[in-house]
Structures are given as C-alpha cells and as structure tokens.
Image 1 (tube, one colour):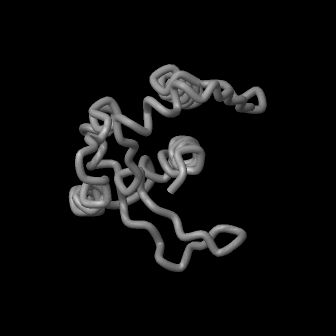
Image 2 (cartoon, rainbow, N blue to C red):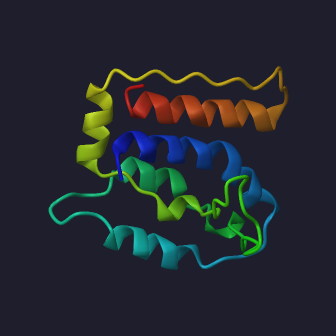
Length: 127
C-alpha cells in the first residue's frame, strides 16, 4: 500500500473511527494488532510512536457492525489494522506534504482533543 494512501487511511481512522471507539462494545484489538505486525516487511520496524499513541485504547474498541459499509462499499476497520513502518514515516517526512482539515466551527473538549490528535500526528509525520 502506498504511503500516501496509508496516511489518508490513518487520518480517516483518526477522524471517523476513533469516535466509534468511544461508543462501541468490546473487540479483541490485540488480534488485529498482531495481524498488522505480520504484514510489516521483513527488516522494517513499526513506528513505536504510533504504537504508543494506541496504548490503553483497547478498552474503547468495540465490535464493528458487519453490515455497515461506506458509500462505495468500504468495510470499516480499526486503527490496529493500519501501521506505518519507520522507513514509511521517513518517506512521509521527506515528502513535503500538507494537510488541511475543517471542523466546521465545532467546539468543546471532544473537538479540541480531535484537533490536537490530528496536529500531533501531522507533526510526528512532518506534515
């Protein structure tokens, strides 16, 4: 998967799926994390910052309704199924990318936390 696509997915998960984590039931997040680790190319390491930001969130990940689909048939997934390796993060940092997002005047602690999470992720990725 291309780095740019992974970045978009990571940001999409941060903006759309994380709120589902607050309202969902329980899911075995450790199993999907193990599957994601297995998909990493040999000789490359998962970025520890990404794993650190996920620590302690397992209790908020619920089950995803299997009948739910996006407008074009996309199947939702948890962030544990998406990882970036150290080499992919370095490529992103050298890419000169820019991110823009609009919270439509949203206010409150939830939106402040969401904005901080997006900014922290972009800062880490050099965006």
